[in-house]
Length: 306
Image: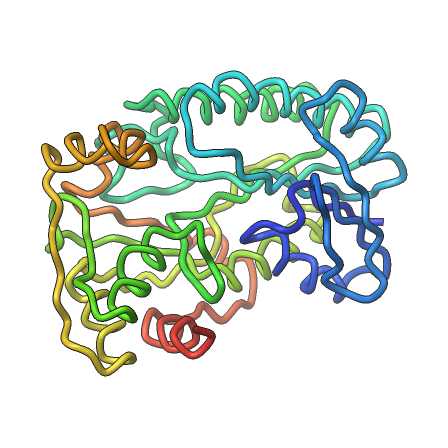
């Protein structure tokens, strides 16, 4: 049995399909799980509730934590540590291996231009501090020998049917509607993006590779990072529309945040857009025979999927 916690989110739904290459028993856990494969076992649960994680994980060999919480700092601070503790304890009790799907928020500002698995952990944001805390919880248990676990870390992501992607929401969907694409702070800086089907495929592969555990992996990402303007051009070319882009400076994001709640959460993260943001996945690519999707192909597939 392999179990996905946060099963019907952006990564979880694609991951469920990929896991069928490795097992014929997949359990999908979320508040309202929906089948991806005909044989999926559905397990409705609120994983932040006491006892829920233990029940959801019982009988599992590998557990994938791909939960996406509401993008609010108070929700993250309150829920993430409790959720991670519950999942870790349940995995230890049931002798299940844990795969945690993570982001890059814990890296220091000076690491953003070339992020590797060895980059300095020095988060400049409140959300980054939460990510540092929960990643450390997992690594501490793994290093103590109580837990078999790994961290699968992704850059900002994009791909088909992805409503949690900045690139999908503010570039692709805007251009599709005949609007200007929006970009944050500086559209002439390079910015890596991980293609979600690649991320899911690689996460499944890691979870089923015993010697991949007790370490951090950057998920495969096209090394030929493009600038914001170049990404807009790619989407516009596929959509056959003008490549118009509006760059939102920090002061505008702060102002709009007064009226648009999600934007009020963004100013502390804008250091990721005022400089090159380069995500290095060479460790994974050297270890595994894996074809990384190019930005050109990824954008084409995203547009074709609508």
